[in-house]
Amino acid sequence: MNYKKRELEKVIGELFDIFPIVTITGPRQSGKTTLIKHYINNKWKYYSLDNRELLLRIESDPTLFVKTLDADTAIDEAQKCPELFHAVKEIVDQEFPYKILLSGSANFLLLNSITESLSGRVGRLELLPFSLAERFNLESNHFLDVVLDSEDIGRLFANLSALNKKRIKDKDILDFVFHGGYPKIYNLKSERARQRWFQDYISTYLERDLRDLAQVANLHTFQRVYKLFAYQTAGLFNMSAIASDVGITVQTVKKYISIIETSYQVGLLPSYHYRQRKQIIKTPKIFYLDTGLVNYFARNQSIEKMLSTGLWGAILETHVYAELLKEAKNIVPGPSIYYWRTNNGAEVDFIIEKDKLLIPIEVKSAIQIRPSSIRGLKSFTESQEEGKVPFSIVLYRGEEVIYLNSSTLAVPLGILY
Image 1 (cartoon, rainbow, N blue to C red):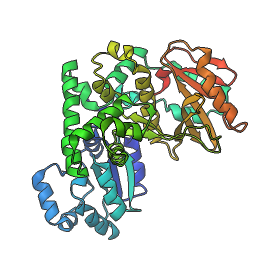
Image 2 (image 1 turned 90 degrees about the horizontal axis):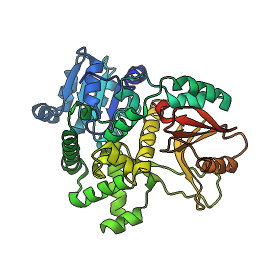
Image 3 (image 1 turned 90 degrees about the vertical axis):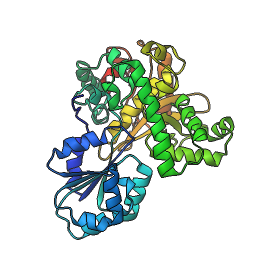
Image 4 (image 1 turned 45 degrees about the vertical axis):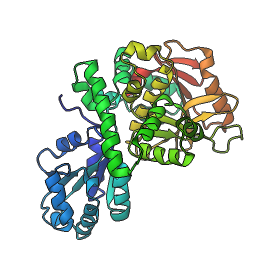
């Protein structure tokens, strides 16, 4: 497969202008090694600690290894040798003249090492699976930037209408939502091969990453929780219910979610309840970070099966969450993302907060929008101070940007990339 440009590329250089060290973490198979090799382009020295012989040599004397570095250097799977970080700190503090790029899949271990050894010396980046734009080799629309930079709904309508001329087709969105964003998937020619890949991915994640790095004793129980989260994607994260279903303690669920979240398998979306009345639900929502994995666990072996399942609305919302998250990570300073729900049933899927402004976004799987689709948006807007919510958005599978009322636009999902 030809190399697909990643949005993170341009940010690496920006961070090296500030820090002597840059780290790239992310889930297994998200494309970190491919990105690094493309970025360094044979001009740097490259080491992978997947090489057992090299790993043993560095473990025996990490200080000696870093003292031999005489060029810009990339070290892949760096978390496999925690002792290396202290040696890197020592050489950087001695005004080391070269750049050091570190990468690893195990965020929980790599970040612990950074916190202990490299604080203040390192710029951190996270590479998640392909975004929709990366999957189709498109220049990103920077949807969030456009929304946040629009002063009022009139300007937003004009800006999004311009973007709509190059929106991604519905069939391509569905294909991406079905397969997910892991790069390797798009090298495979059959659905059977893709199913096998997901099976092996999960096995490797459970048997290598977790047993080696997180010391999870009971992998069977852990896998049940991991799979259960896929069925709960876009739903409220209820630890007590999960503990009861699986037959484990709430404390064990808390430990498992910490591992699963910090290894980039799921994300927790907090509730927006700043100065809100007591009826606001404060439990976070849980989202898988890749819809392909959700479809694998749900046994959706075709797009038609995905669309007909009762999980379809949650899968589409999960796709939108992942797209918003990937874009937000590349905005400086980045916006915050929340959801909003009341005990009375009023709900907004996503609240984007930046510079004291709040942009509510609702996701609908329909091609046409009903008036009931904006009730939650109306309730949220009325609950906030005047002027704090300049407009609201309904993302839908239609083809046109249209006014639903004087403060709400219906926006095609194909613009979000």
